[in-house]
Image (cartoon, rainbow, N blue to C red):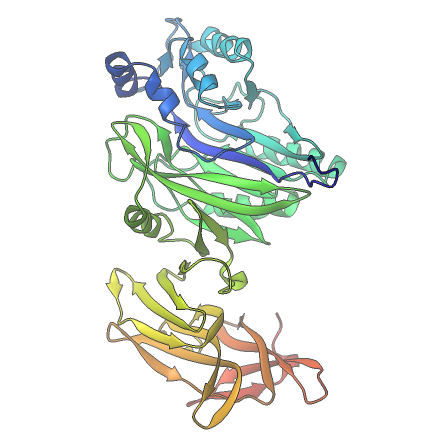
Length: 460
């Protein structure tokens, strides 16, 4: 029986990194057949829309651009891309004019003939719909050789975002952008500055490509920024160019969930990874990031660390903050193992007994050492009441040492966070009074513990 009350599933849209069908990839296709293209996508979980960045052209044109690398492939390759489940192809990159205007037009015609949707050929976002859900994808390039594209400058990009946001702010706007320096593990300052501007103008997520390696992930105003997600199909032979991941966004009225799936390029084509390989690769991907990942079936959910929830149906979290990586393993609901790394040094493993809540990395006592702050609900010897406490460990001598395992504040702790003011870190708490009212307090480290600080002196 079909229920009339059946709710429509989220709209799921997957973004891959760069797809290059020339050079070594073309050699492999000639040797093993075009089934390699189809197999490159068949391990991905079912999605509604699948977006790729086609870095190169589909043409027989010989009108070659004066560049070190020029990519093209036979137009029949797009048929295999379509068979593989790809729905949208972005042409906004520095190789779309490798074979001149003719190559560009041939590529558009080949893609449209095969009923695939084009991105990056107009100066406004494309609306993607599934039932009552929808999102907008704006595909742009801020690299070389893209002056003839509809958007090829920061000013044009901002103008497009402003125009769309003023008219349709209720539709999530995703920026799929070709930018940055090749083979660099972190973005340039102009990129992080631009990301801030674009989020403030109305962009809801940024997914970058072009460097051929993965770069850092962060959240700005609760919006995810993937500065580069690496290659998807390419003759990757330089260091780390064979390590990559795809991004999946689950959308209703807003972007509900953000997932990534790490992959490895084997002879230029993507392959799924074993669980052990995923852990190893993800630590490389998030090395310079500020995010929390936790396992969800075959994918990894991406969250802000401040939103981490240790009651999720998972038993493993990876947290990257302040150039550190923490691995938290749940043994049971009240027992966890914490492994901590900084600059390649792994500290002693901590056994944590109790129910975890907050997890923060900060130099809370302002002594230029990294501290780990953990919210943990448990009973202790001198206070046999089961309630939330804050345990703090400091990373010194290549180990995590207890800094403060105090159990009491003025009132019972509900939650805590870190505030930075004048280059100093403070502890902000929400505490429940005896009258069951919540009150905010701010503490500063005072030799061996925390001292209450005047709220008016700290400007958030």
